[in-house]
Length: 186
Image (cartoon, rainbow, N blue to C red; front, side, top):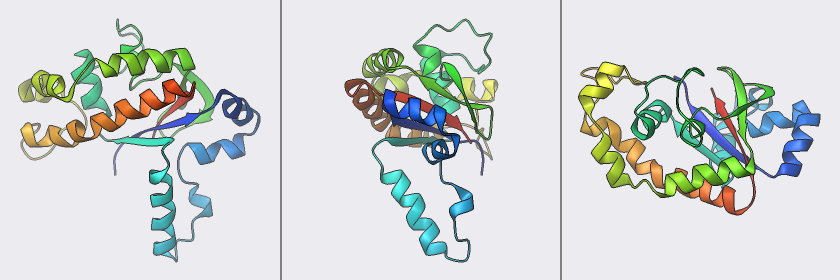
């Protein structure tokens, strides 16, 4: 498996309701494993596919650290970094919620922070990310998920470059709609 980063768009009203109803909030952070019928793999697959088809959901998969490093040049994901918003908000998020994720807490970006991230991402093209990619620097910084054998190479960065336009579009839609974005690491 590994650590994956997922994003969910919610309206400010939905976010307020989620804060008052933690059980309902779980549906925004990933599939509720208690509701799965493990004896029916087809139904489980259908539930995962339904979630992934929702335009208010986006999974960066395991590419989150690579994206953070390409955009910021910083391999650290700790709070003591010198990065300023919106750079640090793309992958790390801003404010923790009360909801636990597998790794830490679900974090959120307020609508104005979402707009700033959308504007920043809109200025960085796939070609620019490709130019920034340096396999030796990725390997030296031990960027997750550190592919084996051999480490990072031109092939290993392609999944991120392919999904990047979808992430940009996700944030643009969220900004246009005045949404809050929830970030979860699971």
